[in-house]
Every structure is written in C-alpha cells, then in structure tokens.
Amino acid sequence: MSRPWPFRHLGLKLLSVGLAVLLWMTVSGEETVERGLRVPLELQFPAGLELAGEVPTTVDVRVRGASGTLSRVSAGEVVAVLDLRSARSGRRLFPLTPEQVRVPFGVEVVQVMPSAIAMAFEASASRQVPVVPAVDGRPAPGYVVGEMTADPSTVEVVGPESAVKRASEAMTEPVSVTGARDKVRESVTVGVLDPALRLKNPRPATVTVQIVPAPLERTLRNRPVHLRALANNLVAEATPTIVDVTIRGSREALTRLESDDVVAYIDLAGLGAGEYMLPTHADASQDAGVVRIEPSSVKVRITSAKR
Image (tube, rainbow, N blue to C red; front, side, top):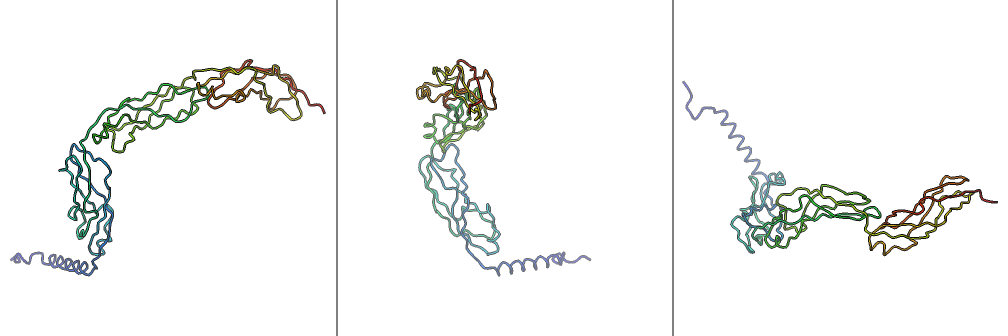
C-alpha cells in the first residue's frame, strides 16, 4: 500500500527545508551595509526627437544590502533607466527615483543623485551635405595640389533640427600628399565636426587628389657653379662657371624666392685628377622645384694641388 501523499519524497523535502534554513541563517548573520556606486544612465528615447545639448552618462546611487551580496555586485548589474518616450519638444525636467534603478536580488536602492535631470529636445531632421576632402603635407617641390574629389560626394547628416540647419559640410580624414608628384587616391573616414550630428549611413569615402605642376616658372640667370666634395689634395675648375636655373612654383613661392636661395653645384665626390663632363645640380627651397639647368652638363678639370 502506498504512503499518504504528504510523505511522498519525504527525504528530499527535509533536505530542501534544511538548505533553506541554512541559507537564511547565513544571510541573516551578515551585516547590512550601504555602498555608493557610479552607474550608467540608460535613456529610452522617443521617436522623432533628438537631444539638444549634453546629458550625463552616469549617475550616483547608494545601495543597501548584505555585505556579501554587495561585494558580489559587478559592473553592469546596476543600471539607472530613464524613460523619455513621452517627452515633447522643449526643455524638460525628468525625476530619477530609486524605482528606476535596476539592481540584483537582495540589493535595495536608497538614494539616486541627481534626483532629476534636465534635458532639451528638438525635432529630428536630416539633410544632404557635400563631402569636403582634406589634405595634409606638401607635394614635391614644383608641384601643387589640384582638384580634389570625394566618392560619395555627399552624405546625409542627422540630428537636432537647429544643428542640421547649421551643417554645411562633412569632412574627411586628411589625405597625405607629402612629396607627391602624381595623383593620390585613398579611402578615408568621413565625419562631422558638430558632436550633435551624426551620419545616417556611416561609410568611408574614396578621395582623389590631383597633383599638378605649379603654374609659374622663373629663370635665374648666371648662377655660379659650386664644386662640392673635392678631395683635399686636388683643385678643380669648371667651364662654364655659371649656369641658368629655371624653377617652378606658385606665385607666392616664386615671389618669396631670393636668387641666393638657389645654388647650382657639381658633385666631385670620389673623382681624381682628369677631365670630366658632369651633370649640373641645383638646390632650391621646398616650395619650388628645379625644372631645368642650362647647360645641363659642365666640363670640369681636376688637377693635383701644388705644394
């Protein structure tokens, strides 16, 4: 004959009661303490509205519970949630109460600071703005930056209506053109400077920068030819002793350039006595490039020095 219903699985029931009593004794024996925490503030946004201005990302809360329970609370388990779905345009004040803070079982929220948060809302808006490429550095001497294009050429920005109305362009990450003599193409990030705005569909842009010869040339005539790196026991003589140097650059660069800024020279490193036809070189400023030197080669006679 089977046992009465209340006594079925009696052993398991007694074990459960014993564990519950043991757990209660353990918890009740712990000291109740309070602790201050800085926790994230989660915002539940209304559709069609945007925040205008800055809002705190964290709040301070005081929680109470058993010391063991609070010691096991990890980051992310306590979150303040502010429901803004009923908000309207304009400046509003929203209370923040302990009931709006999510906590683990056994933890009580005693206080939230601040107890209210002021926020301003505007209608959400969007518009297309042009993408303006940015460059960094200088091309090779004698070259300048030409036409710059971006693909896509426009992007859609989203944000508060007043900020969207002010938006005139989106910028790219700078493309380096340092030392370039030909067009530069690079895929870069696109963004907006106003922190209230964002891109509706963030994506990189391919920027193409045309590098073209500078528009103006200037010829410096009768520049003396310098003989460089001649060994100590030798003497040298160049024929002719002067050359014409033509440089290219922007109008501003050529206007600033002085005759003495351009130096024509022959490199005699490693050469012994004898006669040579050697190429002529010239140094110019970093804003101007040497186009040609006439004559392009100079006869140089090297002899031993007299003692």
